[in-house]
Length: 625
Image (tube, rainbow, N blue to C red; front, side, top):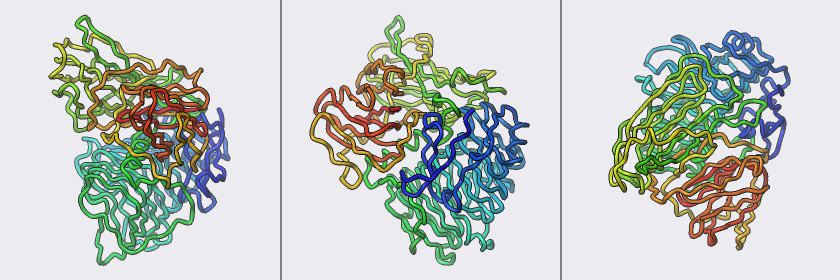
């Protein structure tokens, strides 16, 4: 077993720390940046031995003892997991740590030099009573990196950082609440009392590329004292009463974030009395209400990091897509190039010629089944029983998976598919305009567990071409690593990127993309692009190119409108004539925007890595090794 990635000084994003070791084994392992790079940096257990654990007793013992890199096999582990100093916790896909009825799921208390990555931390449900947080950073903990985690349903909060804890980065993580939470859906508190004036010399925290999503009402985060950099995050919770709140002597730099469909992107606890300083810089707002105005001038970071421009809708949507695609536990198993499972699909016809899609999201076959009872819990605005017109999008819904590593779905109408995102399995998409009318009885089934759980529903399609039979018997699940269409936002008419952030286009069919200032390590795609149900795509499906990983070193997501082939670093896009082609990097930065004139369009990619390629309303994710 290789030792977890060592952290070393790099310059891809300025003066930041970058992950090394086998780059393909840990992608998309973007470099550590922000406050955790300061005060000597954060390396976790990289300079110590490593161990792999598969039971909670060993996990608790090694984590508390410290001085270790700890790989966690798939499974559900009952907390509290107390983490000592010089520790890395790195989860295989499918690791869930559960919060007990009293106490934390993971507790970092007074520890130094800690990394937590690729783990879901599941709370017991938020209620308004005094208890601990799902993930707690407390009592002068220093140099902590929380990366690619999903924290949800925390009893008191999801993840609080308090009591002079310092030099902390929280990145590529997801914070949500489900129906288990009845009240107090207050996610992240940075500083827990006006009277703790010593926090003015601590609480230096960077939060970047995180997603505050379903069910979060407040504290994204709420800040007292400190120097908090809230940069390049995504806020989409329709339940929000506010997003970022400035409290006693807060010092907050709110920079280049994307706020969509939320209330009060910025709120004040007591604006006239608490002497907060807040700089609102370059943020993107869409369908928001309430305050967006800062006051005073916040700090300027002493570190350097790459910040993605979100000044236009196209750039903001590129960042949104990237965060929805990669936030949460989306990293591959340690020591392996296997990626976190993406969904797959196939289409088949019954004797009545009714097409239906089937999607799956499975763990690597080399990983042992997760122990414990499997379950699926429904969330999201969409009902399991819906009536939808052909050519229209369904209302998205999703299921949280426990006791398993993936799921499959059968019986969906053509154009609708299932997508795994961390421990959540989403059902979304636009019903094909050619889908037959009638009832489509679909079933979601967990995979990769010692037991299975199922959930079912019915989508009734109206206005289709012919009466439909139940599609659940018309198709079997597929293990092909291809998905149904990935629908992005309806803003398909994207203008070429401005010269401030995108290299000038070469006026020929052989388009060269100049390198941007980003990490060039080879990284694996881990999740399908998040979908937006507002898109209305009615064109018939196209077959994706039949390239293999061995031949092309690429993981593809098929779409209805265009296909892609790759040889080395040369990308050929087919079927994009007359549409705008956009290429984005893993940070969500728009690298190129160009109106394509030919059906076969060549693009030369600057270096190995993962890219999002979007044409019109559809997108593909590709990985070049």
